[in-house]
Each structure stands twice: as structure tokens, then as C-alpha cells.
Image (cartoon, rainbow, N blue to C red; front, side, top):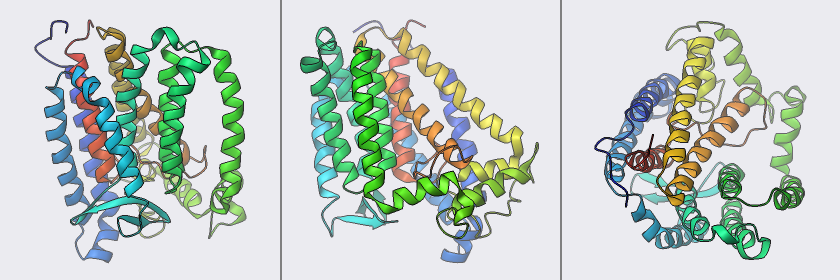
Length: 366
């Protein structure tokens, strides 16, 4: 291993904690009314999110001090464990159903979402595979097909839940990694055509997905049904103006926007903190991605570079999809906003991923 620096990337650490602080504040603000009504405790979601954050921070600092090559050694084992969990979650009585998806495994009073952890496991394994098979990656049969075959096997299991949003983030992340590793562009063109056809097929095969597409194109066609979330999200963003209505002063969280502390938390941010607050959040994400790209470029070996690239791609894709949905630029997909949305599996995974980035940064040339 190359010589390790004494300290990790300080800016990345500060940006991560800044996003966590904004997230904790906005989870409470967005969920207090709903939590008081449903659980008679306005801090119900905020307390659970704080617990998830503490667990995630401990995991982040632990992983930050584990040499990233350790993940190369254990990547195969971790991937197999995640595959087993993806199978277990499909078994009635083991997997819990929420909002029509069997995506969670109950652990005491909490639930774990295996598909979230599969994203990070796939990044670690694919970085190992691509770094070892770099000379074969230009070959469709020897390099591209084995890696994509593994990715789409995981995607198929995730779709059985079904969870198109998480599956899309995972596939998009892996495609970026494969492209960066040197795969031929024409291979992606051909696969892109097949992928578009398959994506259309997945949407057409499930009526609720088609409803999301039609409501995206014209949410006012069914304002009290499929278009309800998007309309209420836009109603939240619009009145926010430049400076917002004020922290805690959202109107849409009063049972208009369903579960505003999860996928649509950015709409509450825009309503309460306005264009300035929303831009500040986007600036923090931009800083995080900038530091991640620098770490990837400065990594001492191909494995470290691909590992960092995968993590940054995962975060960037998830942020773009979530904000695209909230602002009406994309159909509703059920993707959380990293570090900000309520959710234990998502928050823990993101902090673990940052821990890996921080360790790579300790070896980075930049």
C-alpha cells in the first residue's frame, strides 16, 4: 500500500456534517405535525433519525480507519451476503411490505432495506472486478458481459420487490464505473438501445408505473390521484420564493404533501428556506461531489479510483433523480435525498460510503 496521510479530506468531512445538520433540522420540521398526529410525539421521526445518524457516524469513522483494500479482499463475501438478503426479503414473513414493495427486513423495532446495501456492495465488487480485468474490458464477451450480467442479476432481484428507483440508481452507478474503466462507447450504444426497450417494458408491465409517467406529463389530469404528490410538491416550492416562509412555517406539511420527511423533503426545504436555502443545499452537494472527484483522480491505484468513482456516481445520480422528481422534471420514483431524507438504511449507507471515501482520501495524491 502507498504511504497513508495522517488526516482524511477535511472539507469532505465538514460538508458531510453540514448536510447531516440540515437533514436533522428539516426532518423534524417536515415531520413534526404528522408525528404528533400519528404517534403523539412530534419528535418521533427526529429521534429515530438521530439514532440512525449516530450509528452511521460511528460506522463512518470506523470505516475511515479501515484501509480501503480491505473491501477488495472481502468484496465477494459482502456481495454474496447482500444477494442472500435480497432473496430473503422476498419471502413472506421475512420481508415487510411498505407502499406495495417487499423491501424491508424487520430487526426489532427497526427495519433494514437490503437493496440499499447492495448498491455499496456492488460498487466494491465491481471496482475489484474492473481493476483486475482492465485489459479485457474492451471485449464485450470477456469484460463487459460478466460485469453487466452480475449487475442485472441484482437488478432483477430488486425489481421482484419491486423497487425500480433503487435498481435504477444501482445500474446507473455501475454503468458509470464500467464506462470510466475503459469500455467501448459503441457497446454502450447497443446496450443503451436494449436498456431503453427493457425500461419501457418494465413501465408498461406495471399499471402504477404507467400512471406515474402519465401523471408526470400531465399531473392535473388526476389531481387527487396519481398527480397529487407532484402538484403538492410544486405548491410547496412556489410560495417559498427567494427567502422562504421561514423555518417551521411550511403549509404543505399539514397533511397536504404525503410523508414530507422522506422523498419530498427538498420541497419543504424550498418552501421554508426559499431559493436561497435550496441553493445552499445544492452547493453542499456540489462541494461533496467535487471533493469526491478529486479523491478519485488522486487515488494511488485503479481500484481506489473506481471505488471512489462509484460512490460519487451513486450519490450524484440519487440527488439528480430526487430533486428532478420534486421539481417536476422526472416521474415519481421513490428515491430518497442522501443525508437529508428520513430513513435509516439510506442514511447509514451514505455515511458508510463517505467513510470509504475518507479512507481513500488518506492515500490520495491531492
